[in-house]
Amino acid sequence: MPIFDQGYQAYGGERRALGRRWIPVWREEAAPYLHKRAFLLLLVLALLPWLVFGAGLSFAKTQFGDSSAMQEFVKQLPPVDESWVAKLLTNGWDNFLLVIVSVWVGSGLVARDRKERTLEVFLGRALGPMQYLWAKGAALGAYLLLFTFVPVVVLVVFHVGLTGDTAFLWQHARVLWGTLLYTLLGPGTLVVTVLALSSLSRSPRIVGLALIGIMFFGLPASAILWAITRSPMAWTFSVLAELRALGYHCLGVAPEMEIPVLHSALYFLALLGASLGILYLRFSRREVLR
Amino acid sequence: MAVLSVRDVKVSYGANEALKGVSFEAVSGAVGLLGPNGAGKSTLIKALLNLVPLSSGAFTVLGQESARLGSGLRDQVGYVPESQGIRAGLSGVAWVALLGEVSGLPRRAAVERAHETLQYVGLGEARYREGQTYSTGMQQRLKLAAALVHDPALVLLDEPTAGMDPTGRDEMLELCRDLVKQGKTLLFSTHILKDVEAVCSRVVILHKGKVAACAGLEEVTRGEAQHFLVQWEGKRDEFVAACQQAGWKAGDGQNNLLKVVLPQGAGPRELFGLASGLQGSIHRFVREETSLEEVFLEALAKETV
Image (cartoon, rainbow over all chains, first blue to last red; front, side, top):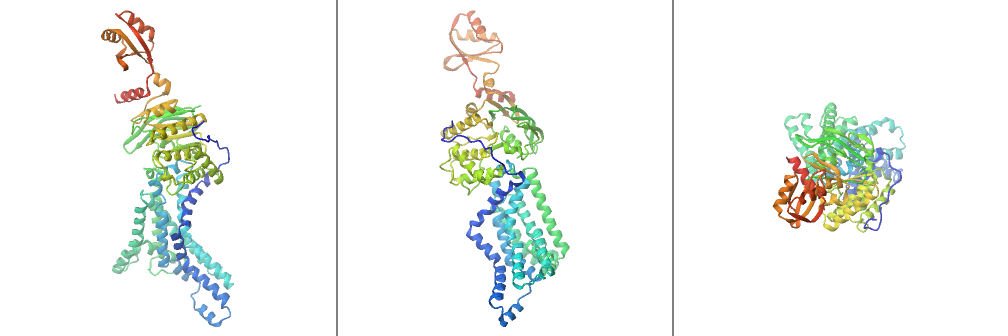
């Protein structure tokens, strides 16, 4: 009998399948942010342009449906099409918040586990590196979806529901699949890049600063370079500009920065490849645990 | 059947070879993994858990052959890391329950087990406090609870008493002894000899990445040679010289007694036979058990030579 008042209890119950072990890690990573007021405010701010537009449509249709003046006003609103969604999806405000959330949620994903040495506790259990990274990436990815795919879906539902224009779904199907493609290629790559950066340091603060540096200071550098050279290649230094151009290309709209579609695709594939390469080297050789 | 069998395991960090072909077996009970700092104890435990890549070698864990522990097999293993290993911002019970879930327990069962194991290790009162605010001793016990939450058969403890006060250390050792009674196999890595003596029935001494000694604790401490403390009433020098002439080691022991080391095959009969041929007599005669410390130092000395 131990010196304490309760003896050891054996466990004979069921066990969760190996493929589902990532779920608690994902939940633990993502859930705490939902209890932070500042973070919730950030989400609301990001969704605000979409909410205002959706609620505005609803309000106009239900309250002033018979008013000729209001109908005239509604007619003047920009049409819900690929061009408009591309502008809304990649506007500066949304991209700014996308970076803020990436830094807030993403900088500590792996770095915090390295700092607290909980990474070896997780990987010492029946949780492979792939599952671990998937759980961490999914935590950030879930929030980034709220800035990209989710608002577009909500907007389309609002639009079709209020106007009764079901033909919109196949006439402008690209609004949905283009946004999905953009989400996977753009913010999806961003998640992998953040994971790779986070695996390089034990300090979430350093990772955060590096991310902010890459995201925000690349834009003015590219703008200056573009002003001098007038070459679309100048935007290569700015992830935000490339993200914006990718959004336009995915929705079939010519981007303002005249970045060619091949350039955009190669840019994000190269970024994805480099990030995956870093993660592979760090985890397969277990360097991330040192 | 050996719960853990380690065969010719080699691990390198760049040009530095941390483990140079380590082999041993552990049957149920506690096995002490003893060695000075840098001997390769933590590396061996991490290699077992696939936390460092192996250069060569293999393990057999619970009868299953493995170059390293696969995911499924790791459900049967608990791990207490040496330093940190506790998530900031989480209460003790939340952290243990999370690790229970990662080890496959359904949510409700994981929370129940977390409460049970925290009670077991003596943290019942503190379980709702944030784990990182615990004292060093409490943190070690929290890590033990996390290692036990999924009811593993084999528990790997990396310096579990490091930084603990004497009371906390005794409590931790008591818990380890109780786990052995529960049928668990412990691989107890430490550089504190008394901890091994208190818990383990078998010891593996690692030095410079090699196994310097490996045997049951009794076997190791008894050794092949027999140690005696002798009170000699007569000329000490004459007695010591006679012993040395017979090929035995003799010298000053504790409490003004003479220490005589007889080789295998020789015993008290030979000792008294030698004494009868001298002027003097043996007044006191005590058989001395070799301490683990002596074995440890002897093993290290052999390796150094």
